[in-house]
Length: 493
Image (cartoon, rainbow, N blue to C red; front, side, top):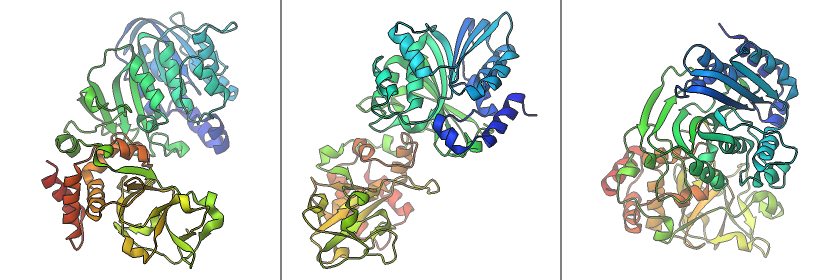
């Protein structure tokens, strides 16, 4: 039997068009997910000052208050601040909270923008409304990019927060507004766990909180399935000013939590001690993976004299120079579609993308000398089983072409814009195509994009080991995943 709040959520989800959902970046929390989030708070006593930022219709607040009312939390009283900027939801939000109102529970609905309200409170603005230091916060913040010159970005900088999305801004402000020991539970996209754009946010969070719990949904589409959200989401519990210790990582296929599994991990498995980027890994097994077990995998690309870059040819910017098929004054232009099953196929007639680019004064600076390279697709579809897919560029496929163009959807491993030795290119591709690498990559990368930064910050075997792997690979008539993994296992230790 669905509760009244869940019935309202489903009705609004069906009735609200995608444009409005995108405008507010808010997707209402399903009832089972809300109950799971409320269940992550440790038992506590005293007076609870609760924040629900981006409250929607109050699903998260209701789940928290239900747990309190049923005896799962032992507060003397609860004072709730619920922020919701969409005034069309205020009637439903007030209705949700009304049934919990009594002499031990008060709830205030704030219609103003949470970011500006929190920034003003933290910075002591002249006309700011003071906010309490919250002992607890539960939130499903909006998901939307923040433009670099927006009022949000400027406001956040006033309180030392630099971030690129509303969800990370909400979490950072909640941390800043929380009392020491304050417990924060949020459901947010996993995208903050890696990549350069969220580096300041990761630094902010890791300096001010301890990570206590991370929950990962193994299905990308099930956390907000009623809203067709394909972003991979995690639920995270943070403790403001907490001493970092073990981290509980739980997983479930979807929001039924019927196959829930939990393990505890030392923090150095979540954030590697020597990682300046502070990537957040989400191990799903207590066992160390192959990459962690092999001490030989300890080199950075810089140690190997190798670089990786995003393909420099952005096709829409050089559209006038692109050609469907090669001609007398063109050179090969390579897209992910030219690499299937690890090999190079060029040109491809009937391909939706051009096969060639004119070589002239406007394009010369974007071209690489023909030779052996290792390339990794930047994007995989959500249906694909592998996140990291590497291939070798075979110069013989291009006849007498002197230079090549690499389109922006490829990452290219190179030697200062020069080709790699043949065996090294093959060895890199074999290493990157191991199951161990794919599993390790998924621990910190929650989306289908593979950035050059991610590949730069990974650890690799030595140049000699990669070369030996490549020499072996070139001797094989065909390579299967089993062969790749077995060979890697014998050489990486």
